[in-house]
Image (tube, rainbow, N blue to C red; front, side, top):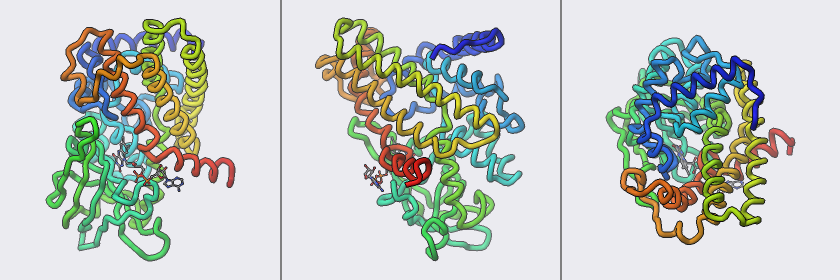
Length: 394
Ligand SMILES: Cc1cc2nc3c(=O)[nH]c(=O)nc-3n(C[C@H](O)[C@H](O)[C@H](O)COP(=O)(O)OP(=O)(O)OC[C@H]3O[C@@H](n4cnc5c(N)ncnc54)[C@H](O)[C@@H]3O)c2cc1C
């Protein structure tokens, strides 16, 4: 999208560019670029996050009184686009983009004071404890039980697919505090320290050999009731609010635009005269432009203090499709040469190749990883169901 930027926005863009040029090192850029896992390892990004924090830019989307920047939607868009172009990525979206807005909306003053500074500074790294074996799309069926005992809950049960939980020092989790009535009415939202006795983390190794996912087991883990967000048995509302931010509260345009630019370069270098690939590329470019417009309009809603709302499901669905289409087109453009490379994580740390070969080597791992977009954060089918109910009224 070619925004017609005014002189103030252009000056802002230059400031962002110059900050990123100073703080995104070539090694970090290469690491982000070649990470084939779903998330980039925190140690790759922590220095950038700290620099953003010193600049006052680590949580630009938060209200100003909690450390946000008060940027206009266009400035936020510029910031994310420039981050994408520079090869930067979010340090811990589960903290800054998911649970942060939840604590701001539902947390007590004491909870805000305790948790928000660690998210801003990067001292805390948060994991998401929603899914359980048998409770993914049907999340309300979750069984991890929290039993009241004085000032504490005693937690027993299991979470699964918990991304980078082995790197996290905190986790937000949904637990069952009642089995009476509607399933949604017996769920409570808790903030939990990962070093709580009774919590153990077991790796799930991905089919590429990577350790990104985990299972988490709770065995009589005691969690203070003071860590509860909102009322007991009212966690479903909090959980859904968080999901709106997970699905549609981030500007993905910058990141996806970065991938799209690489795809253009790949096709230009390898098969510039292939009409079919060029047509698909042009269609994708149009889709990307349209999504950027929608991203900015959703940012305007949030600027007015709102949450993304049901449109977050539309964003999640379409961004997944576009990201997967970019990865698929890259495979077709790279051809069978791409098959020489198997995924290996952390890919960037093991690869010693000239830059043009790195791009080819990353094609298959990125394609395999892109399959996750339509599953994580709620599958595409689930988003379609939500849209049917909330927007079309079916
Ligand atoms: C990369 C990645 C990272 C993740 N990170 C985390 C994390 O950090 N924390 C966490 O809690 N979870 C995480 N997850 C788990 C994720 O939220 C679940 O995988 C997802 O919600 C789907 O649940 P499931 O795997 O149990 O699949 P299921 O719910 O069993 O779904 C299986 C299939 O059935 C379809 N289906 C199910 N119900 C319906 C329906 N009603 N209508 C139509 N189709 C339906 C689904 O669309 C899917 O195709 C992650 C997943 C991925 C891929």
